Image 1 (spheres, rainbow, N blue to C red):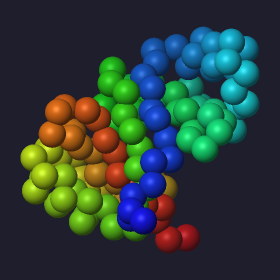
Image 2 (cartoon, one colour; image 1 turned 90 degrees about the vertical axis):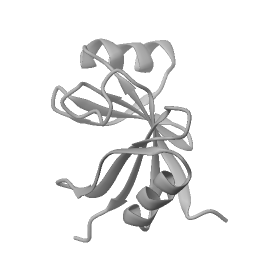
Image 3 (cartoon, one colour; image 1 turned 90 degrees about the horizontal axis):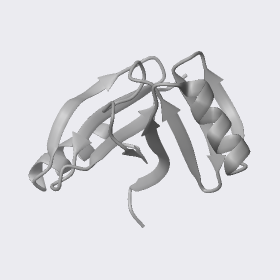
Image 4 (cartoon, rainbow, N blue to C red; image 1 turned 45 degrees about the vertical axis):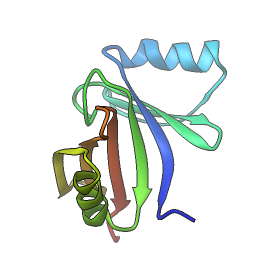
Length: 117
């Protein structure tokens, strides 16, 4: 089993209200939580569909796969060794340790691990 678990797909939005309305009314996804006017998490089944404005999006304008891991620093090293690129990180934000990266084909990735409470 891999040390990495895909937990979210982060989509860009410039209008969080309109995006929430689209995904809840059109697709029937339940709103799990909302963080102000810049982030919302929707229940997409086994994967969370996250909607983020540029304020809270790791790579604004891109679709990003968010991958949970126990060791963000090791993930960042593996990305670089495998031909990818680190955009930012590893670093701690308010809730988690993160590294923002591109894979070897330019697809957006964010690796994260919750900070101890």
